[in-house]
Image (cartoon, rainbow, N blue to C red):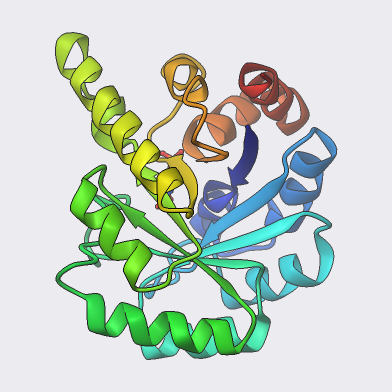
Amino acid sequence: MRLAVNIDHIATLRQARKGHEPEPLAAAVLAELAGAQGITVHLRGDRRHIQDRDVELLQKTISTRLNVEMAATGEMASIAARIKPFQVTLVPERPQELTTEGGLDVIAHATEIDAFITQMHNSAVQVSIFLDPELDQVQKATSVGADAIEINTGRYAEASGAQAMRELERIREAARAGAAAGIEVLAGHGLNYVNVIPIAAIQEIVELNIGHSIVSRASLVGMDRAVRDMVALLSR
Ligand code: PXP
């Protein structure tokens, strides 16, 4: 299973002083050297952490795949068409939210998502859609032409006991449905070094996007160690 490291919170720390350190590009290169197979950033409308220059520099510099999470807006479409990352992941965005709160409702926003995907494909950018583990959402993502889905593991991560087991089963079913439909299946949100284990065992999921727990561990033991520890848990 591939690991893509989300480095948004390196930029959060930098933006706390609006200065130059820590440099997200340096974090990305260290993550790659430690075995990450991709780098993910979320370019938010309010630019609270990642800035346009970060996306530009990452795309020019990293040797793995750059995945940029964004809302399906005209502004973001033109940035993606100009910078051309490997992949864009469409996410819902609420200005006051602390972090992404749930999956994108592909059914409710099918027309605009369809148009966004066409624009991205014209620029040779692959599109993934972050969605909740619901079969009708997976089906709609396939029919609007997404290249991949990223299953939201947030509710699983917040649950415990029997509720966590139920959420895990929903993720398994959504992953199976996505793989059966021929779409690439990714997952992420709220995963850490403990709750990742059952997710890593789901064969249909080919990549995880993990940010907060890796950057938190990196702040104490270093990026190299934090990424290597997670890569070891995902090897199968
Ligand atoms: N996937 C998506 C779509 C996200 O928005 C985020 C958070 O930016 C993540 C994965 C990573 O979540 P976490 O930081 O909790 O690992």
